[in-house]
Image 1 (cartoon, one colour):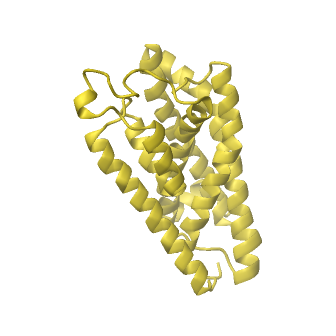
Image 2: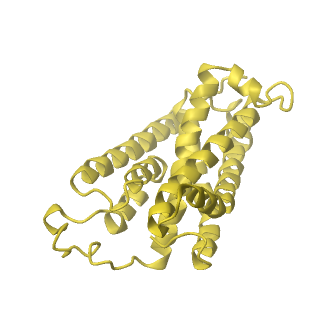
Length: 245
C-alpha cells in the first residue's frame, strides 16, 4: 500500500483532534473517581465515547452522566439521585453510546492487532475473500465491536431488569443486534468515503493505522456511526427493547 503524503494542516488538525478527545476522556475519568455513575458500566462508556465525541460527549457527560455528589449520595439531594429522568433525546444518546463504546474499543483492538500480527487479517479473509487488507480488518472490527457492545448492554440491562445471566444475554442480543449493525454501517460508510474517496484520491493513498490521520478519520467515522444508530436506538427504546437511562 502506497503511503500518502498529507498536508501539514491536515496532520496538525488530526493531532489536535486526537489530543482533545483524549483530554476529554481523561477529564471524565478523573471526575468519575469523585462522582461515579450509578451503573458501573457507564464509567467505561463515557470516556470511551469521548475519545471520538470529544467536547460534545464531555458536555453530555456533565449534563446527564455524572453520579451524585459524595455528600448527596445518601440524602439524595442531587438531581440525579432524586430519580429525575433526562430528556428522551438524551436517553437515546446514552443508549447509542453503549454501541459507540463497544465499537470504539473493538476498533482499537482490531486495528492494532491486525497491524502487529498481519496473519489476523488473513484469518478474516485478506488474500482470499478480499484483496484489500482493510476489508478483512473491518470484519474483525465488527466481530469485536458486536461482542463488546453486547457485553456493555448485558451489564446495563441485566441489573435493571433483574434478569438471570441467560436472560440477560438474550436481552442484550435483542437490544443490540440492530443498533450495533446500524452504527457499523454508518462508521464503515464514512470511513470508506474518507479513505477511498478523499485520502486515496487526493493524497495518493489511504492513511495507515500508525498515522494520526487514520485515527482522525476514525473519529469522524464514529460520529457517522452515531448518526445512523441514533434513530434505531430511539425506536428500540420507544418499544421497550432497550432500557431508558
